[in-house]
Image 1: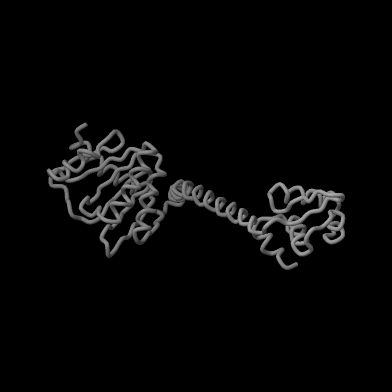
Image 2 (image 1 turned 30 degrees about the vertical axis):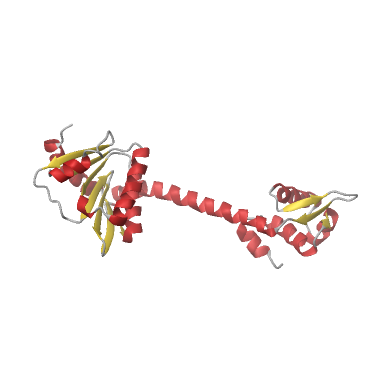
Length: 251
């Protein structure tokens, strides 16, 4: 058969593909002729015709004797769209499940897991990982490095985080410039502690959430994110963060 392979890969069942291809090659055909050409039982042929008709891939021609013919084959592109949507759903479900799998792996094996991302797209993917967190997010960031593409990316991230009502705690240096910057950014889901003499120009960021610590370098020539999942390391970083937070956060 000329087209059965691609039809099957598009998602048609084997017998659906067989009936479709016969109609495509022969043109308008009676159901009884499909019995002989396909080698299928009468009931099977009519089931395939009903399924293909319902999906818009063939049409019924009414007359003295009912016949069938394929519709424009471009309609099969809907099968490609279905596959794409299925892949996208699977990708989203996997990404949502992966952090829990990594945490479980670390707990059961005692080994940390490390994921590395590169470029601005990689930084955004790593940043979005925190949107799957079950608890609050803690972060240090060099705000001077959040410019250009990084700023645009961060704006998208903030909108998604706020839409999910996820709380982020941030520690930044206590400077007049940063107090002015954050005066319009602080809200019930974005909390900031201003720490005197805290470093201001480290051109990177760190996020701590669940059992993961995310390190991101934000220099234009080298954008790399490293996500390390390990309960003990995450606990250490949370305690270090909370030590500063409890001293300097003013509600």
